[in-house]
Length: 414
Ligand SMILES: Cc1cc2nc3c(=O)[nH]c(=O)nc-3n(C[C@H](O)[C@H](O)[C@H](O)COP(=O)(O)OP(=O)(O)OC[C@H]3O[C@@H](n4cnc5c(N)ncnc54)[C@H](O)[C@@H]3O)c2cc1C
View 1 (spheres, rainbow, N blue to C red):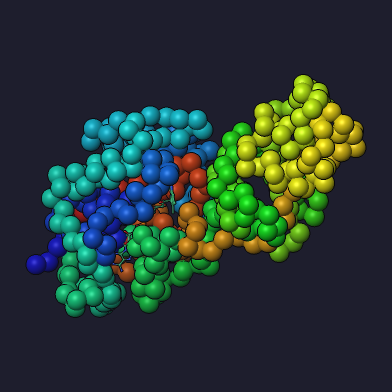
View 2: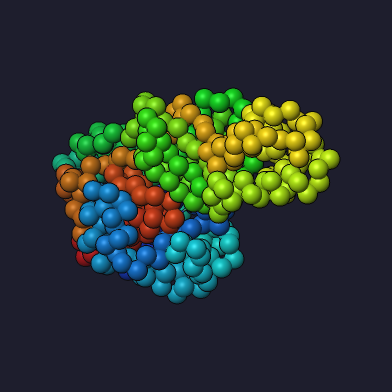
């Protein structure tokens, strides 16, 4: 059988593009190498799926993607943030908006987003071919003629959409296959690097803090002792460094500066300046004058952090807190307001939220997502050379480019 449209990759971009082409009336096949669609989608937003970001000004939204963002303007005018929200609501997914304008399903379950998309595919009569890895893409006379699966089965279609994602979290199926085909077809693939990643630090002591998550902290980045970035929010210690929203968002800036001398300073108590925190500590220390130093920080810090702070302060842990000197308190204050770690490197692709780099945008028609080099080929999603910060930005790229690719694969066919 010859299909009107064959979509390779059943992630968010592939699902919406296949569904849109099918909804319009095309016969569509969606090919996915995993047993199930949307494996990466399921782990987004810590299993809650941050679908998009309800930034009211599209220009502001697009600015978040840096210089490549302008590629999205035209597609956004067709299927932008509000259209995405309407799309999901029309399919009966209830949506809520949280702090930072981040949009989630009311149920807090990415599974519900996935099921909504699968329902859309079924309604659009898309043939879902899972457990099917595409091995080769065959070109003839400047067109894709067919694709060949791992079991040598051939799939023939008039139009092809490649939406195989990036290279991060390869266990979910995103192993970068589409980049190889694109290169072979004559496309340029810009430099690929892991983006939005945890950091690895030099201090071995973090191992003892592994798993400790911090809320309402302020973390600043210093390049050669000059502050270059600072954010408030959540972070978590890992076995060899730190992760969590603040760190991941700052990782892009850190990448630009490494291997220079980069340090991060954690302010565990940003609501209190040095003198207010000093007052508070003195109150705690004097409340029970017999209490030993090691037992006097319980009201101030999470349990896991206390032994580390005690150790690094150099203050005798058994000393009565009321005997602690001003000089010793000063040391303690610096640990609480400027807990310093030296950045060694960034984590690898496997742990990145997104791949930076991809198909060179000047080779893609921004109105249709069609390749300017191959007559019947489209690209959608993370495979394109666009990446944004956390907060729903990257999935919005998938919804927008996927919808537009699916629609145009159908339209140019008819
Ligand atoms: C931990 C984590 C959390 C995230 N959270 C968020 C979030 O909350 N909000 C947000 O906006 N973004 C988030 N992202 C980013 C978001 O997941 C990606 O931007 C998005 O999944 C990209 O979608 P895609 O369809 O382009 O590719 P993918 O989701 O990578 O899907 C590509 C699909 O193609 C299939 N495939 C690959 N090669 C082949 C082949 N040869 N044959 C057949 N099939 C193939 C893969 O198996 C895969 O299913 C997160 C990412 C991670 C890793």
